Amino acid sequence: MAGAVRTPIDHEARLPTRRTLDERLFVRWPGAYAAFARALTRLPPRSRLRRALLRRGALSGWAAWNRGDLDLALVRYAPDYRFEPLHEIVAAGMRDSYRGHAGLREWTADMGEAWERMDLIPQEIIDAGNPFVVLGHFHVRARGSGIEFDTPLGQVVWVVRGLIVRDHINNWDEALRVAGIPAAGVGESRRATPL
Image 1 (spheres, rainbow, N blue to C red):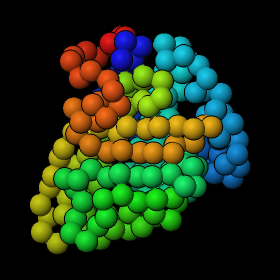
Image 2 (image 1 turned 60 degrees about the vertical axis):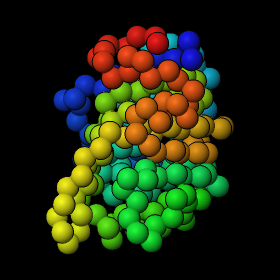
Image 3 (image 1 turned 90 degrees about the vertical axis):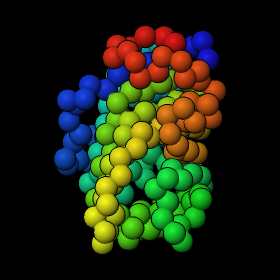
């Protein structure tokens, strides 16, 4: 997609360890988050403000998952959204997709049973408008055996009226393919440039 814009996330960027003031407000008033996100999605992908806010949102969202803050994570999702997890980390008995807020809570519980430690590390956002892709790594340690697994992770996100309606997780190349973004050169540069 010619209009896709890359925004790196510095490897030294810190994921928040607790909720910020705006996150506390969004959890208390989720409609405020939706209105804010709707305004953000109206900005063009090349907008510096959009790139900065998407970066901040990716750090906030991935940090919420890392610390198990589902209430904050769910603010971003439509009530009927569809989540498609990375097949490589789906344990026996888990489903290929989950629906809605209850489905996301179920997936989180399923992951907690299979994996004792889960760390998400965002690295880059590829913004083609809708969808956009967050590239990073996912590090997990199996409960019981202690086996560790580290994999590149591409999160493809579709947004409608400011809320995520579909969230597809895969490896980087497949995530970019699903989003319709050419994979050539992705991950090589650390500066924000158009593809």
